Image (cartoon, helix red, strand yellow):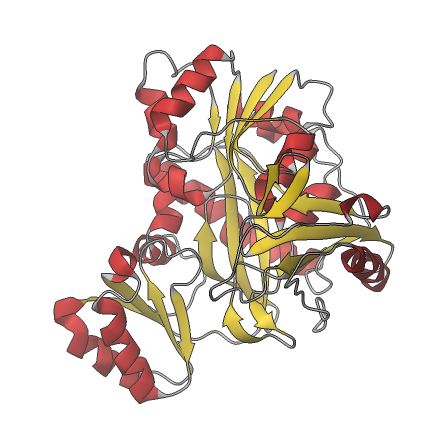
Length: 422
């Protein structure tokens, strides 16, 4: 098969790395890709939102299957674009329709969906600019901390958790006034759920599904989960507290009703569902849905999948996931993200990365990198994810940190406490 992966981050490198292991793969294209994906496939300089450019590539290269990495093109309707085009509609896309992508594209849609299908989640209300005073009143009835979420996509930055009521009321006004642009024209205010977080990943063909390995990621920039939110500083899989009993509850109370709910709304959903969960006294509550794999979770989840990944993608396209028994590696995989100095604030790009060839015992996934001649340069805030296997989490982390030390670029920073709370 000739396969196209849309995207250019760590998640897409992990997907490309996994698919490149399959004997069913003929050619692998990544648009736009990065310095890492260039090692396992062919990078093509086409943006994720350039649907016409992607169409031309798919036709010219005889692509048999498209896998969409990031959320933005899904929310913009890339799957519908393929479905509605006479020359493309026979080519399967792994990624939901625009209607399905609303699970991530609109926090309000997702909360109403959960309410409708009795999927456990925190209480909430949604506000727009002219209901600001009602929103501020609603906040005063909640117990701190207060959770404010921009309704639309805000590049992972649209969630605020605030301890002080006056500050929360002021931030609600700021958000509705455009703090996150169009994304916060609507704001969901929700009840804070206390517990410990994890992410569960499901691959569905709209009917059948397989549950992929769960993971726990670390969002804050600072040690001990302090400081600003980032796109993710590291991850661990499996998650020690997510035993068989807990995962059974997740499947019965969350996964099945989610897939049934999508079906009953007539939503065409072929692809990944990322379920952000809170384990609250042994019971799962949904914090959010995403409509793609996570990053850096992909860098610990995909290495644990032993089943041929191209076969999984084909089974999704052909509606036969219910026949698939997924095989997993029992070992722990950990990943640590090396980021640019200054991230998640302002940072410089174009720093030379050295030492990649010195890493022996880990898998290096590129997130924000680019090739210039024979040099690999930094090209984003999150630069490299270093993933390692171990019989225990400690062993995997020791190997990861040893490898992380060998990679060098100006301003390199990483957290040294991934998995500290487990």
